[in-house]
Image 1 (cartoon, protein in one colour):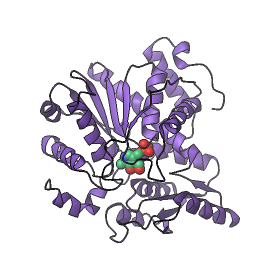
Image 2 (cartoon, rainbow, N blue to C red):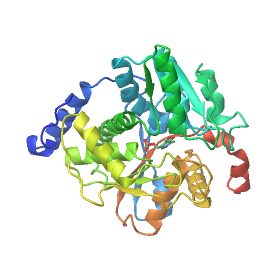
Image 3 (cartoon, protein in one colour):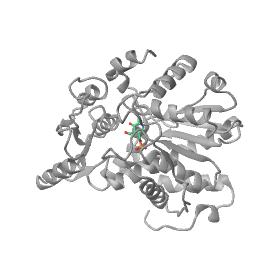
Length: 360
Ligand SMILES: Cc1ncc(COP(=O)(O)O)c(C=O)c1O
């Protein structure tokens, strides 16, 4: 879909009509089935009671079905759908050695029968082949390690140029790949539709807040979805990294991803300053380094709900939501959906840190 038309709210009066229009628009875009959707929605009674005054649900995108699941399954359905529709014959992804995204790209490429080149950064976690790094190798991707101090974006661009010269049509995903990031956002418009359907089906009032771990795309899609449907839901992303990381995406770029995702389904949205709430307060001691608040939040969910989170992404996002409930940024009476973006294989490569925290 290329032409952006008016705001969806102006065209369709009711929520039912807006949902129908959005679904119709999404169905016209290239998408490859990679996982199990809709993902479940769990009401967390014991976790909510322990915090007092709020109701929390977890949207289980960690159960999305492909190779330990996560938000990337949902996103890659559109990202790789677009890549294959445009003739790509090799997918390039590079990130931290314990990247969930890399694991999912390798699995999705295997499922779709397309060549994949993974470029793991030779960071502190690279020497022990565990967790995501171990699993990623099983999918048959070519592995091209990248020195820890090199620019990942430049490394991926060089690999793409080399493959192009060899007659391939590469498609680069992940950090710096603007189109792929916007397509990844698009997938979370679809996730919001699932959430609204599930609340309506259960006869529950819609959530007041949606929290998630996000570097941009997941949050951008949820925000675009809320605006397109005309819903008064506060969308907050807890970022696992800050501006010191090459992969960090700032608020204005997230805004562009939200506008871009809405444009892909053919509608315009308006965002005001402050609408993109992406919080970097829970990053410390740094990206890829577990935090005491994250470890506590992981232990709470494990002990109260039997649910697992990881110390790099989903656990830090969860610690942000817990922090905002405790400091009343999320007010008493709020109905909060936390989107679990996955990342669980990383738990196994952080066994030392988990044991040292005293929570495991
Ligand atoms: C588990 C997990 N959660 C969240 C994210 C961030 O996703 P997004 O960039 O779509 O916001 C990632 C990215 O790698 C991830 O692996």
